Image 1 (tube, rainbow over the protein chains, first blue to last red):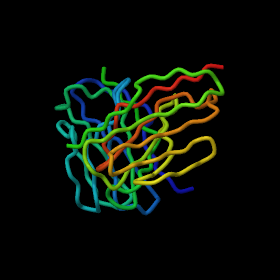
Image 2 (cartoon, one colour):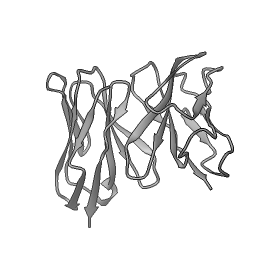
Image 3 (tube, each protein chain N blue to C red):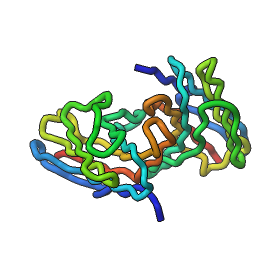
Image 4 (cartoon, one colour):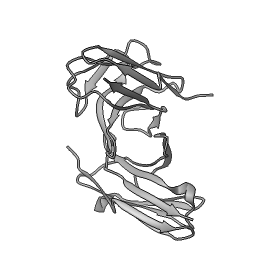
Length: 112
Length: 104
């Protein structure tokens, strides 16, 4: 089945450690996105990528990094510089930038 | 950047009732999407509706792009409709959502 796979679903880390969240899609979409959701809040855009080897900062990129070496993959690294990393992280893709979004199931990160 | 406002923030209904959720946005856009987030956090696509009206079963949506708003209608609500409804526009900026609770 075509879709977006995020892993891991749950992740616990100690403060000061970098964490990488995986996002893989087999929809042949050009555009991919990372969002952060805090409890009771909407989604905020962290980074997006319009095409392979290109990515742009979203509204809350500080403390995060991404890469887009393959069309199918858009991993997100939560660095130790992110002051409040505990959150629900959602990856999405669309055929083209600003097109209809499709989401993965999300990764819940808890930093202890 | 574009501002997205959803109303009401919370809505409680009895099963079988109808409801209307609203999404206002601050700038002209050529895309708009409605989602339902279930209790496990999964975002389910409801409508991609830059303009006009679409219907899918008990749900329908209308976007009036020239007046910068969209409406989501839920008829004959069921308990499984409970959750948070989001709209997203532009570079998929999200509103804060409407939390719907449908009581049996």
